[in-house]
Image (cartoon, rainbow, N blue to C red; front, side):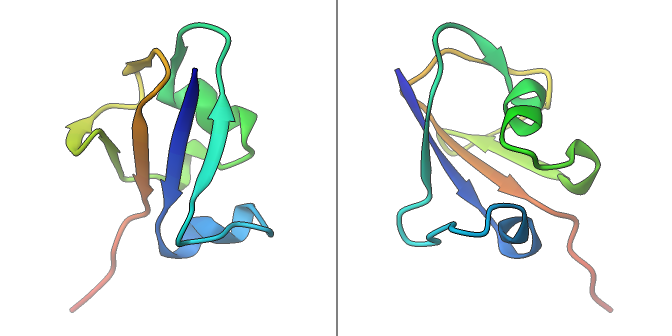
Length: 79
């Protein structure tokens, strides 16, 4: 079942054809962790600070089973 992946701000540069309105769809053939997903779509895990799955905060070790909405966010600077 496919995952819908939404990337925030600076993470979008890792997927040149990324559409921020649609996100991307990624099919999984079974269970996969968020960390494994990031490796497969070439987004460095060190660049991710917040993971949201179906609107809830999760860790990089969270197991995805498909048919979920995954939001990835970098650290945010400010002052």
